[in-house]
Length: 230
Length: 407
Image (spheres, rainbow over the protein chains, first blue to last red):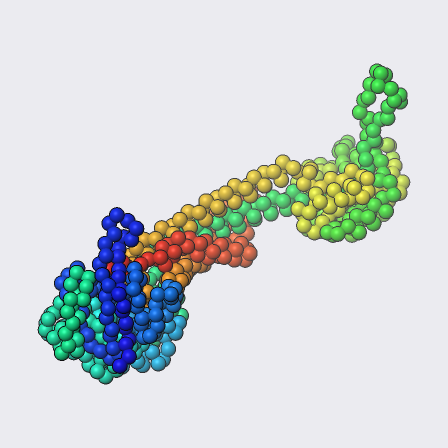
């Protein structure tokens, strides 16, 4: 199987060149295969979110190699990173982060609108289908802030999937949801993973959910402490 | 609801503006007010200036050519001599080879009309009344292109032949005459003639209405003892502000004394220029204030929209496009405000033109809006909007997506 994400000796420091320079990731080596469903666990402050942001190309590593879908990212400029991110990566954030000025349907179409420049009929069909799949039929034209937390997270998942990315990065996607809704959301991610073969990397504090992943990577103090497979 | 049709940047810019209702409304109001003030002031001042210039030039040639003043010559070229030079009394003289000078003037670019005039002092006599007048011997067809006499005629037409004369309404009143009556005219040299009044004019200037007596050139030449001569050549130019330029070139080419209305009315011109300068000053200040307003509202909006900017970046929007979204917001606010401002200025013009009237009840200015002024104001507002958005837009583009999302 080929790797969708490949990290070699990845390090990240904040405050480089200042007296308060701190290294939060001390050389991470991880490979994530295509279609893999993987949990990233560890205590608060262990560097999970930082690692996710690095893989999501939202931040740059201080040193080490990072390849997404076979492309080395070290030499790429901001523009190229943006393109790579848009093409291959879908994000699901903890606080669902929808655009409040737009409807559920528009939020799901947004990644396509960004890439195509305008909303195409195809994008609309895909978005409607995804909203149907996440159980939000009839809510298409509601503004994001008229939806419940669980509904917003469903919209966020539909949005992350709208460009059929090869990698979905989820930062505590169930963090602020009740157990029942959290199970639903998790099941949804798992379903799309099986059906479409999108690899998922999920940061979670919930050991129940982590146990249901193919693999668990545990981060402690900026190092990979433990890797276990189901 | 159909899917959005607008391109990405427009779509997001419009939604952001719509979301910030109160802010957007306030800044639109500011731009509208600013543009309205600029358009209204510019229109008002340009119209008032046009009216003033029109009145001044209504009875004046743009450029006048006259003979050189006669000067005394030193009898002895000896600096030690104690000869006293007195200014010489100027007698009425003809322009040397005036026909050639008329041709010279007509050949100049930007010259519309040239009219030789035979003018000099005389008395108009009737019964016991004796009035000092200015005899104006003209070729009516040429002169009506210098001073638009046709529009000033209250009786008869502007046409002179034989011993016919056209006089102003004030002179007619003073002498107690009207069209069809005769008036006796005696020039300073003693020559006289009985003239038949065929027309009356009202130039809108009492002094000229009392003084001007139009006759044929031939009659004026014989009365003023200027056989075959003319005392001055009046010239109209295409653009009144070219007059100085044309007069300088004519002076160099002809060797005569050539004056433009701009030198004869230099005080008026200075006043108009000062008015234009103060208008420009007001305009610049308003533009700066409007720009600051747009800028500050957008700066606040960038901070408020931090999270959205982060989300858009995470979904693959480049920082340049984020910048474009905020520049567009500035442009949209500027343009929309400009349209509303032009509308408001039009309303103000309607209102004030009905309120402010001249002594005789006519509106002080016309309520029409000049398309050029309106278009340039709209364009300026658009450009200022975009420029004002530059700082906030760059801030938005530079925002770190991770920080923005966490905010």
